[in-house]
Image (cartoon, rainbow, N blue to C red):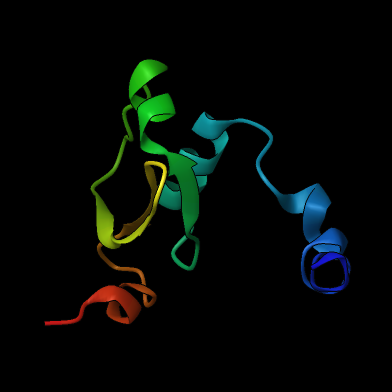
Length: 82
């Protein structure tokens, strides 16, 4: 697991959002961006996105995590299993 982190995440750590609102703001402003967060924390902190986002229920990880992407995101198709 550490090898995966070192190779795929560590080089980009300085680009990752430091707080939840920053992650949601990036989802709203960047077309090819996705952000995961604990739904309960977003609700508790009163974070309301300033754009239309899609919560992807199929991406929920046990423990109340969700993935938010914009309706225009090319990644939306990864989760649209109709």
